[in-house]
Image (tube, rainbow, N blue to C red):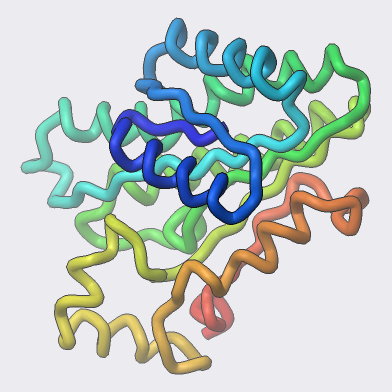
Length: 218
């Protein structure tokens, strides 16, 4: 079940998955609205018969000095980055518990959930919260055989990092701390996503796994 607020993107993604031989559907959802999250979870169960894997990958990155960034922007960033994953865990988690067959929850965090950065108060704080949510639920849901982990990438190509890939000076600044010497591509953490979705990760939970080209090692 592909979930987003942008229906056009969802429709294109589902068509591609079906073209490749997979089974897919989509649910348009404002992830910050509890009623909409409940509806989407119900649609997923009705369509696929249950929920075994939840990938919480929502994220925005609006930045600015704390004294100048509007409170409303801060709150919206916290809602999208933290409240949305929390609500899906609350509803999909209950489904997994009731099913009694375990499950996998994978958050997409950030190296910024571990390190501060000037003018990124909302983003760093929100991703730090996501990391602690993964750790806490890893402890809480272990008895249900539900594994909860978090992939924390550095800068990789996505909608919210377009400005980095378009600015050579910013790229140079970031790459100074990346031993592998390049920025990330989505393919770079697909392997980790597959690992955390499979039985190979049955004894991994509550972990923050940095997939960052060595950024946090420097």
